[in-house]
Amino acid sequence: MKQMPPPRIIPRQDHPLSRSMISPNVLKILYRLKDNGHVAYLVGGGVRDLLLGREPKDFDVATDATPGRIKKLFRNCRLVGRRFRLAHLHFINEIVEVSTFRASPSDEQEEDIVPPIPGSEAVRQPRSLVSEDGLVLRDNVFGSPADDAHRRDFTVNALAYNISDFSILDFVGGIEDLERGIIRTIGDPSVRFTEDPVRMLRAVRFAALLGFTFEEMTWQALVENAQGITKATPPRLYEEILKLFLSGEGEAVYQYLRLGGLFAPLFPVLDEWLNSETAGFPHVQSGRNLEWIDKRIAAGDPVSVPLLLSLMFGEYLEERARIYHKQGFTSLDATEAAVAEFMSEEVPVIAIPHRVVLAVREIMILQNRFRKMPGKRPQSVLSRPGFMDALAYLRCKSESSGEGSDVLNWWESYAVNKTLPPFPVQIEGGEKPKRRRRKRKVKTPPATL
Image (tube, rainbow, N blue to C red; front, side, top):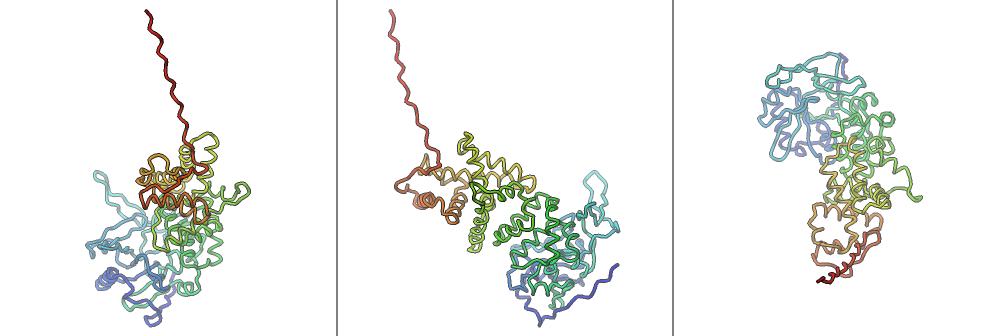
């Protein structure tokens, strides 16, 4: 077994992290593990964020206690995962993830016994399993704190806070990279991205969110392995995409993804369209929309998933709908066709749930309805489930491009006052009502004798 170098130890007086910054629930976990003879560290992004003066979204704990032992120590424990066996400790206001120190997958095929399905025999599964192309399928090989640090993704995420003496343990040079603002993989970046392609998206998210730059070899490996991002499962990619674009740094993420070659395999149709022009003009609205979303998140305003996706794809969907409209489709049918066509290409790559697809379609359809002021039954428009998101879409478009401000003002006034604003107008591009033909009176033939 390879001998790991000793960690750099930063004593309490040389770092700003204190117990007062840590969730009381997490402190209880750390102390209970310690008091029962186990090594327990606060690890991962929580340590990174606290050292940077940021508020962590959550806290993770790593220990030498096995999952079974953790379950015996904590009544509120639920064991989850097959690929990575983890313990989730449930409290009233948070869930804390506790993992056992792990080593990198090895050639030794140790086995876990999987509880049997009723009526069948127990199944033995290898604790580590790697596919032919290097993708880690299963990783439950336990190890030391040093092993655990070296198998993490990036140096800035491999720092540990020791509850025993309140020191910071740095096994991989994370403190130095944190001070320099660098995203660097632990070990060969190409191997790490092959083991888990989603690490490339995590690298982009951390760089954008923290304002860090990429270490040269890490960035080069990301560019070279970008096409492999689709080896990750579509449901996992969907979760990661939401983390990326709802991080508050969506526009920076967008630029990193396009620059690094990750955007094309994730959004192939949209990427091809973004690289073209329409009537001599480049397609820049998606980037502007993401800037608008970032400002909204910074202001504490919620952004729903359907609104996010509508603003990302909206410029393309509107152009496709206009093409269908010229082919004789009604505005409604043209929009539905554009959304269905795009989503049929996108969903196999990123598993966007059907309910979200329907909500995106509703937002886009309401853009056509907004152009009719007041139109038929305007009060029913206010009660449609996608109205507020559709109005937010129109507001973003108006603020970023200057289009549709008159329509926006009319509907916002109507939504607030519930009375029709004066001088409703027919906006160019909206469907004009069809003229009704007057029915001719049928002459009754004279009665015959």
